[in-house]
Image (cartoon, rainbow, N blue to C red; front, side):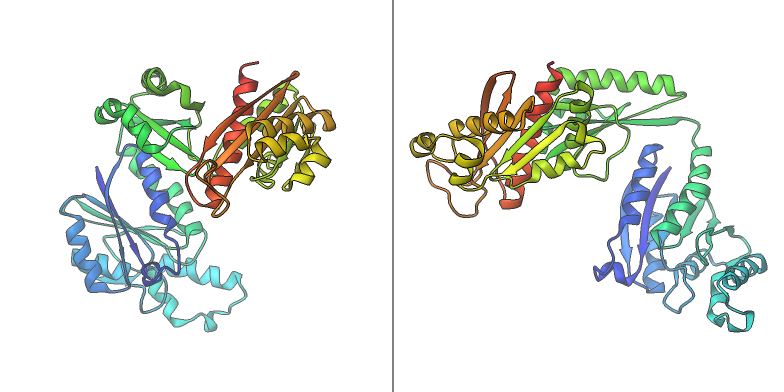
Length: 421
């Protein structure tokens, strides 16, 4: 089965509304092995929409639309689908009764229900109507000559519920196989670099399939398998992940979650879990990251059992006074140096009484850099069990990206430390 998605609404074209519906549907279809080769976004024009159906059916046998099912004159999706298939729109009494009852629940008397609401109960007799449990606009499935148009409402809350409860089961029943996906998360390598390393695997798109997703601060690889049962799917996935690990395993920080998290990265959650699991305490001294590490850590529920203290020591005076950094170190090596980072990490750990001391110092830009110490230069210090180490990184990007990349790289150092315990 090949599907095309058409999002209807002039407000989408104007950028007034972000089109999250197409993203949601594409993810759900990919998870059950249905191909989506094209998405279109159209304004509220019936003739353009009818022509777009013809274009879509040159490649697809099913078109899924969202939007354009309201009561006003510019809501034209059903009308366009009926026109494309040459079907007459008539009043569906059952749908109208549901709409009336919904309006009455909101204390609107029958004589005050807007007359244009009846438009939402108009369908061809040939259509399969999909009730809307969360709004007044029913969906429908239009069919003719092996082609199918599935129309759903535009509001995401209504669309997602309708898709999950009514549309997805139909699509699953039409496919006897099951599909499972697992994500592998990478840190410390960019999308293009990982693509080059995994090129042979990516080019061999049989079963399982492998796809790359770039997110802020990390890269995800989705492995999707198709089989008759869950056991066979998982076996295929595990074998493919072992191939990936053999090539790029040193960059992997998490394997096994089956969805893309809405958060930018899972790094902070993983480090929080490890700190609690290992019963280790941590204190953080930040300069260039300005509290980002602390913010990432406190996003974890229960982290107060591990996260003891954080301070932003932005000036040299603060580094000396709060952390005990030597003035001689600052004079000789500067605030942005491995020596300062190490003394910061040691100082915060000892004054807080924490198992782990973590520090950052660097040049986030856009000014302040030099040939010797360019913008993006960051030193990360790590203290643990009487030993202190540091790493040097030069991050690309603007001030925000440099700070975020430094903070998550610092957390990755803690992750590697704890996983090695």
